[in-house]
Structure formats: C-alpha cells, structure tokens
Amino acid sequence: MTRRIADLLRHGQPHEIVTVQGWVRTKREQKEFSFVEVNDGSSMAGLQAVVSQDLPNYAETMRRVSTGASVEITGTLVESPAKGQRIELRAQSITVFGEADAETYPLQKKRHSFEFLRDIAHLRSRTNTLGAVFRVRNAAATAIHNFFQERGFLWMHTPIISASDCEGAGEMFTVTGFDLAKVPLTPDQKVDYSQDFFGKPAYLTVSGQLEAEIMAMAFANVYTFGPTFRAENSNTSRHLAEFWMVEPEMAFCNLQGDMELAEAFLKYVFKFVLETCPEDMQFFNDRIDQSVLETADNIINNEFARVTYTDAIALLEQSGKQFTYPVEWGLDMQSEHERYLAEEYFKKPTIVTDYPAKIKAFYMRLNDDEKTVAAMDVLAPKIGEIIGGSQREERLDVLERRLQEVGLDPAPYWWYLDLRRYGTVPHAGFGLGFERLVQFMTGMGNIRDVIPFPRAPQEVEF
Ligand code: 4AD
Ligand code: MG
Image: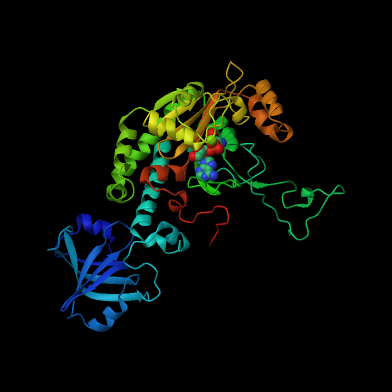
C-alpha cells in the first residue's frame, strides 16, 4: 500500500511492507549498497531507503536515481541503525518515473539563496525551507477556517472583480475587455467605459470588506478569505501586488469586541500551527530566526499591548530615536514607527487604536472628539502592521458627511448607504494580511518567500 512518508515516520512498524512515492533528495553510493533519501512533501524529514546490490538491475536503476528524480520504492521497514531516524526502508523494487539530469537540475545539495530560489519558483517548493513554509501556510489557513467555523461565522465568497475602491487609496488594477491598442474614447477624449465589458470601470478588489458588511447585515458574523490586489508600487519585503486577506465582519459589535476577536484569533492560529507543524516550526527556529518559538509562545500566553494612537505618538516622541519620517500627531505611521512600538517598546504584538480620521478610510466610525476614528491596527514585532480594522460608521448622516469630506462621489456607494437606511447596527471587522501572518510565524524575511507564486512590481511568472 502506498503510504505518505510523514505517516510512516510516525507510525510505521518494523516488518511492514510498504510503498512510498516521492522525489529523491540525496543518494549516497557505497560498495555493496546505496542510501536514497526520498521526500514526498508530507514532512520535512524524508525516508531513507537502503538499496542493496542484489536488487535486479541495480546498476542501471542507480544510474537513473539522482537528486530530483521521481521514484516509487517498495520494501520492508526495518529499525534504523543510523542516528536521528527510527526506521528505514529496505528496498525490494524501485521504479523511476522521471530522471533529473544532475548536470542541469538546479537543486543540488548545496544551500541556495532565497533570491536564487525565487527565479525557479516552479522548483523551490522541493527545498526544505519552502516545503516547511507551505506546510505552515496550509496549517494556518486550516486554523483560520476552524476558528471562525467554531464560532458560527459564515465564510462568504466576495468578488474578485469589483466596482468600488474600498480603501479609497486609488491603488487598483483595472479589469477591462478593451483591446488596449484601440480604446474607445468619448467626445472629450476620456476612456468610454460605457463600451467596456461591464459598461463602467471595474477593478481587481483591494478588499472584500464592503461586500462582507452587506453579508454581516444578514448573517451577523461572516468572514472572507481570498486574494486581494494592490497596485501600489511598493518594492518592500512586506508588500505584494496580490495577497490573501482574511476579513471577519461582525454586526452588533464595537471596537472593543473587534480587538478581542483579533487577539483570540491570532492566539488560536499560532497554537494550531505549533501543534500541527512542530518539526517545521523547530526548523524555522533553528535555521531562519531563533526567536520563532519564543514569539509563538509569547503570542499564545501573553496579552497584547494596547495603546491609543495619541499615546503611541507620545511614546515615539519620547523614544529619543531619529526616524526617517518625523513624528507628530497626524503622522501616518511607517513601519519604522510600528516596529519601534511592537519590537522595542512593548516587545509584543501591540494594538493601536483611535487613529486620526484624516489618515484612515471613510468607513471608519467617527469618535465623539470628531478628530479620531474607532480604528485599530495590530502591530507585530519585525513586521509592523499585520491587521487593520475598525468599527464601521453606521450613522447615515455621518457617513454621508465623511464621504464628502474625503472627496468621494456618494452615488456609486448607494447600496452601502442603504445598509445604514435599513436596519443599521453598530458593526466592526478587520483585515489580516495572510502572508504577513505567515512571515511573522516563520521568521521568513521576505514576503515573496511565503506565497507560492509572488506578484510584485516587475515580477510575474507562470
Ligand atoms: O489595512 P488594510 O488596507 O485594511 C483593509 O483593507 C480593510 N478593508 C480591512 C478590514 O477592515 N476588513 O489591509 C489589511 C491588511 C494589512 O494590515 C496588511 O497586513 C495586509 O492587509 N496588506 C498587505 N499585505 C501584503 N501586501 C500588501 N500590499 C498589503 N497591503 C495590506
Ligand atoms: Mg492598514
């Protein structure tokens, strides 16, 4: 019977006859036999197969078995005399599906830089580090669904093609059916979107929030989990043009409830991943960032710090640090400021609340001081902002005023305003950047290395 290697390493018993399928990581040829390590992606560790010279067709088979080749091996499990592994496989037969020419196959034994691996993203998942990243990513995604499903939240599939700019930042990719060589123009030389596929401008969504708000007004608690897109030209280790976002939205909820959910959520996901992927997390701690396990422990067992924006600005002013962007009330915090707060001052995830209305999106609920909004960002050490959320403006008149103040035409938001006309309630939600979470968990330095196929400025392959 074909078995996954993770299962065999844990539960396989001596004398069992099993078949494994996978890719060869290493081969060591000795006089009378060879060692072949096979990995099938189910775990960091591979299974060592011992291939004796007595195997029919030994020489020819061993010529074809090299690093990267795909194989099926059937044999008997035996206790391993080697250190660090409980069992190994005495091979009785080997089938080679596909060879991998050692002259050209790029993933040989040596350690490769992540930059080099990015150029061969079609092969990099076969390395230890990227393998661990994508197993952790999968576990985190599972944890996210479990967390919300256990609490009765409905998963809502919000659209990828959208007509509205949720964040009002104008960082959207246009979706068009036009032949760009012959774009129809209006008499005053503007693009005539009435002739386009949707009859008006359409974009790749920057957030599923506005649609999630619609659904929260029917189901009370919902969440989205899907790809979002930003055409911001940020070439940093924390920005992608396509990233996955998790966005819970809760009716009958205020900022306090929003913060509590965000904290419980992060604790849950970290705990689940530690329990599900202990070897991978140990690997990150040993090889990538020695604070990974301590960070996870800290997240799970300690309360997050909470501070208002106004107090946070005071802390930055008192820090005695020279920041590239000078600190004053009204500043849109940059990652240098966020990292000072979370990494140096509080030394743990920090929730900053009540930001100035001027630097936040139109939908955030205006506080009684009329200067700040009921917003909250969760800042993580080393990453900076990982979650952005708020209580939403549920009062029709205030929302109309806010749209006007930020210079947005209210007409296209008629349906959003309707939600405030019919059965409006206090409600709140947040957005978690999924890749930033995976970066935070694994200690991976570059966000391009925690998504299988990164899209960033000047970067699109496949
Ligand atoms: O703070 P943002 O822009 O908030 C929203 O989009 C809200 N509509 C969310 C909500 O309240 N439902 O984005 C949310 C999170 C950020 O905190 C960050 O983690 C991540 O999305 N993010 C990015 N991740 C990778 N690459 C980018 N270019 C990102 N932009 C935002
Ligand atoms: Mg934000």
